[in-house]
Image 1 (cartoon, one colour):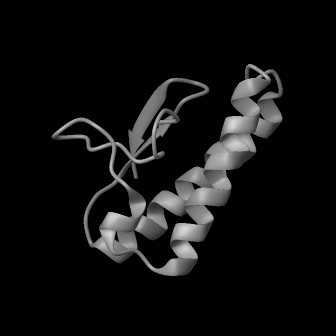
Image 2: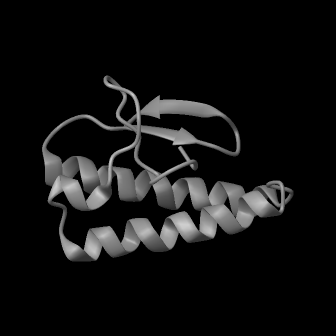
Amino acid sequence: MLNGTGIRDYYEGGYINPADLNLSPGLLQLINEWLLKYWDASYLNYNDMSLVDALDAEGERIARLVEGELGGKVWYYSDATQQKKML
């Protein structure tokens, strides 16, 4: 979710600091850069759906990378469309 760190604990609630997940530095950088772009889109009230679609596609790709590094299942939630899906 967009509020907080961009990573929400599905089971316990609250937000997780990506650095606490022991992700690779490159993946942490991807998450931070993507989150900044998503925040920028939110300030425009998500009025450019092609941008939202591109950001969600990038977010899903990043979520799959997180899934690969952690070895578990990850959900992706689109703040713009308010839809979630298991990857």
